[in-house]
Image 1 (cartoon, helix red, strand yellow):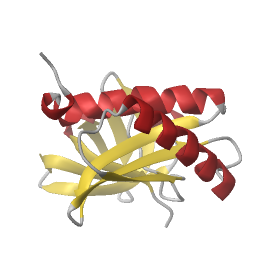
Image 2 (tube, helix red, strand yellow):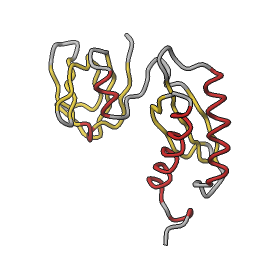
Image 3 (spheres, helix red, strand yellow):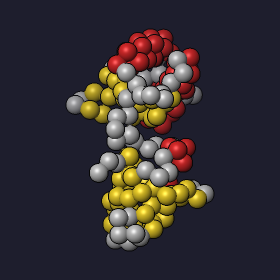
Length: 159
């Protein structure tokens, strides 16, 4: 039988995502992503939100209040945590396949789990998405195919 204590990090993240989507859909905001990680001896839950025209402090406050109340009521996290609601910022993280599709033509920074052509860090223009891989054009003009599964971190990047 699954309990709060044994549901695991991924199960908790999925529940949090579902609850966040309930709140954000009512406010016409986009869920960019969720980070659920240990930080200074506590669990830090960061919910990144966005909307056309950008996110303002008032948006973050409203989401924090509504989501905080929902998290308190549903109680999916079996221990204390810190909730932060934030804009994705200028160097917006790319977390979902739809993010990569949306930002084709933009400059990105990619970190991979394993080496590709002898490296794990890439900068370049996101030029396409094929199946479950992105195409990246480096400043040297090289086209690199990177599997979405191999991406450990991706962000928009402004040089």
